[in-house]
Length: 470
Image (cartoon, rainbow, N blue to C red):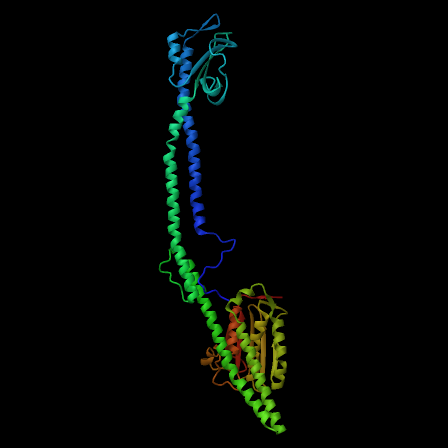
């Protein structure tokens, strides 16, 4: 049963929220940008601070080196007390220095590390690195002075605690906070933009859902964003196909009721007459008449069922169904041999090749060929001729008879349902050729009516593109 409550259908596990997907796709890059910016900002601030303060430390180490003299290969430091005071004075950090020659400490702290982490510079021009002194983080500058021939090199070390560095780095990192605020503001703006963008889509979807439940009329697309116009067009096409399908179903029901009403009324009347009469001969005649009426009604029911099976979408199921047209035509012809013999009509089959392979639905194509043969035999007079010819390259079925034929001005009209030619004789529903054309259309086959070489009607079924023979 269809749900006409207007509620949206339940979402499956594979369905995704458009709003969530948009937020993820837009906010994730913003988050990555923010994290990357923060990491690069911290790293850059550290590099800038180290470079500035390392430059000062190296200058201090070079100032100490300027006071080094060599006497008999031994280094002597000529650094006045005032100069040492200026070098070591700092209101915030503690500064230490030492001068060594080989394993001998000339002046200063003996425990300043010679190596450390986060090195910058090189041995030739001076190095700076991080170390540990008096249980404090320090930054150390190292200068190497080459001694005279045969004398050991002199190593000058200047160490400084990192209080000012940390404060300066933190001040630089504060510059990042406005950028974080901008990213947060951008995130909120993206969220609001997505929400405002999706809200009209939700309203349109709700309106379409309500409209589709109320009727099958096309939905309005004048206020639909351009990106959704293909979706709206596809939806309207689907609704149009549903309307057409329902119209075909209603037409089929009306047609069936109309066409069955007359033979059923005849059966009822004949049965009543058979019950009321006592003459055996009249009863036998009535039963013979009822038999003919039953046969005609059975044929009509068969054709109505054939129409009911015709689905314009069924053509998509033909792509993988290959069949031999020769065998199919032979089977259909064999099924009509008795009809031709009882009528005194010569039924003949002429084919070229052992096999003609085409894509088909055998049941439907047999119905179409059967209708053509039935009409040909029925309208061909006694002693007449019906010829079935098969050819390949392209595959063709030609059925010719020596009957009265169909006038040129009626050859298109007889393909309409319940339409018979002016010269049609006997019983008939006018469905045969309509069924033929609809089945042919499902197979991509063209149908043409011509004048046969016997003076009657020639029906040509052509399978364009199929020329596979073996």
